[in-house]
Length: 345
Image (cartoon, rainbow, N blue to C red; front, side, top):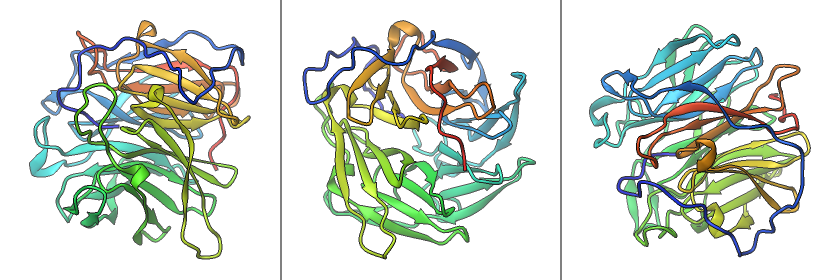
């Protein structure tokens, strides 16, 4: 997810009549509840808008604040602290474009985070160790986007997820593609496809800003949201060196704004739909259930992640960026979805 200037102040719930079937029943879910409010909190002189989210095997929750570069840590007992702060550089602030975005945890519980600075020495993916020490893991250089008028420049690394081999895949919302970063930090621009381009969106009829966004793996498939196109694609990661190919899993107006993803153990997909203030579940067959809406306190929901602790794995956490509503409601929230989340490697 990322911030879209001048989008709208509040949304009504969009009723879908398109290609996605709405499920009539499913696992029993609990109420959406507030974990922590970032309202009235100043983070490095900026408003505290939570975006990225990751949870380690011990149940520590990490939240990335978009404008300040701060990573907050919530211990299993709920105690908050500033775990690390990354420098957003000369383009920091709401009008500058720099941002701290998606996060992921590796098999050693190290934290990886997308840092957007548009500066070659820092633009890319950073690694934050157990002590909060941050270092550049992979710089992401300028590329050309043929689907955006031949734009050449830095992209917007946004979401990230590890495959079973420990490779890190990173979506790029401006470059209509996906980066692949090896365990050693070597980055290549792995896939570029027009279905990951930003596009005119349903709500304001103007050119959007965000293409490829959320990313997760399930049963050998990579799933990626394309925010402005209301699309979730899937990609079978080749094992023989062949070129990867994306295909549409689901696409519908009700998914315009699709952002962060998470899977449960029965392969249902949970999607934060930020533009529309919705949290939805999509079955492996493509049927969709709305779990929470603006009426449950959703305000531009961005990232999703399941609790990893035994006995708590049915709890899905998500960040509210806090932009669509007035007054804004930036927060960390949770909901019991009735099924355990897919465990970390």
